[in-house]
Image (cartoon, rainbow, N blue to C red; front, side, top):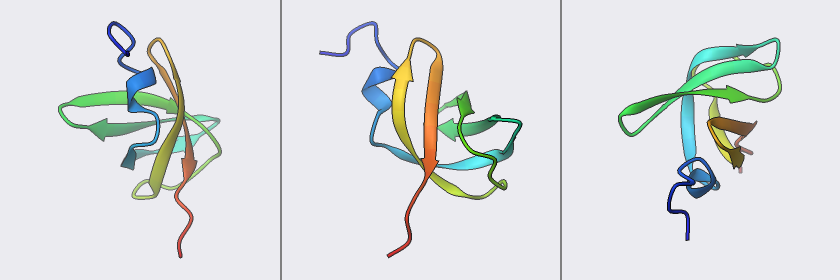
Length: 66
């Protein structure tokens, strides 16, 4: 269902920020690709969940700790 919609197919996956989100933008590494992500300002090393994907843009939120 996500053919040619790679970003949308990533929704729900988790990753670790390799660069902090500062000013609303940061980076994650997922599989063999580095993605620019948008979300609240967070420190590098924070675990995040991909909440939406549109084209090349991913939006993330911090993973809630149990």
